[in-house]
Length: 334
Image (tube, one colour):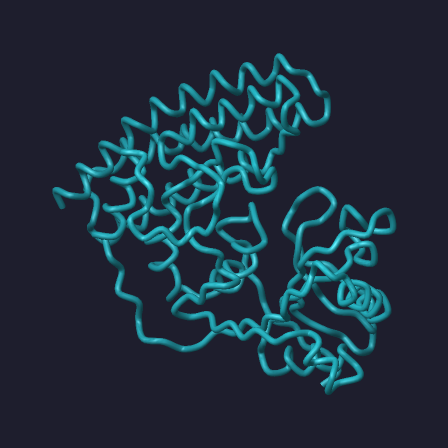
């Protein structure tokens, strides 16, 4: 076979690769929807910005290191592969033919449509999803130069250079991960787990099953709004370099919550949810405005714009506090 491409869906979360990549595979299969809607509720935010690239995120575990019921993950050290195979490209092609998505780290200096392309040597991960021998290209997924999660083409020559450069970096010994869907019995959706997470979100309590591994001090749930406001204030005072990513994740959480409400209503867990749907529609719109405000600030460095974002976050906090309280009370009475 001279070509083969594995499908990807638009992932429910795109803020980080470790969520976007697995979810773009899981999103292809309706059977995975109950699991997705049961998770990705609780949020965490650093109170001391020890890692500027991980300020705000879902409290759920890294999906590239924690298998889900449907996605098997095999890790193989790159050095072991190279010890027995002289052509790494053929290994990747063989994996794709066996329906494995291939996750690995490369030097994005050699990857077209990436911010570092031909400008800076940056080691980052990609997901290889297909190949075409006639055109001599791989199809890979990742963030483009505008921060969008997309699929793009990489020539075999560029791929060889990108993997060769990454494999000799002493601080990047990450294994090659092979991701593959596996058939399992139907997933049993737990409304009790959803209620537990909503309650912890409302009370700003750390998850009872804390799987997010980080030593950085953090807050959870509704309290993250205040932490995000402090983050922006630190940016105004030029103590940190602000990123739009935390606010993209804030938007995605509201977007996913809207879909969760519809899912619960369709299955009889919620009755008369119009008020909640309206509230989260407004919260999603406000989160989009906040995110766009950060993007515009990055372009203009106009600090007064950030003061409006801080005010908007305060309004969102109060609105969601009421919405989550109603959400928990409504679900519990079903």
